[in-house]
Image (tube, rainbow, N blue to C red; front, side):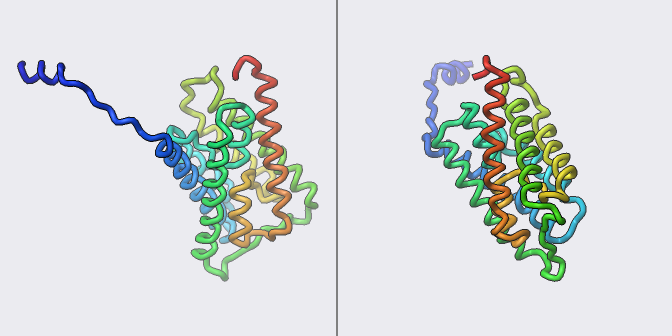
Length: 232
């Protein structure tokens, strides 16, 4: 009893975690998620698998559940841009996320190309479609992805939504099945850069992905604000 009383009266000491350490945890988490997402897509696509959409959607889903409590589980510069427009992340953190995501994607592209047997490698083409068609496909599905993320993972009306990872993962899988034959179904600038690094497609077409995907992120953020004026 005396011991218990002594413990109760003993002062409690807590160690504050430095701000830079908290930021580093977020950035490392974003790097890990973007790495494994890009690695899964690159290896599946390079080896000619027909299950690339499932690989992308499932990997994104589990990485969101793994790191969402630390960084929010963006793993996608377009999503981070949408969250920035939606005002749920600051510019400094957003910049850190972008760097971590892009580095993760590029490193995954390098390793992905290295582990795939060169005899198996298949490169992505636009399958007879124009770059304009690919741009429209990437714009629409990236918008849908960012819009879903904002509504299921950042809305104050769904504070206890434990199924957001499923919704986001299925959005990517459904989108990839729908337009994969037109654009490759990437919906993510980090994955696009990693794919180009892996030789999945030529650098000359990278604009199709980067420009429209980031534009889609901005549009999704603005759409969320317009449709949810009370959720700031």
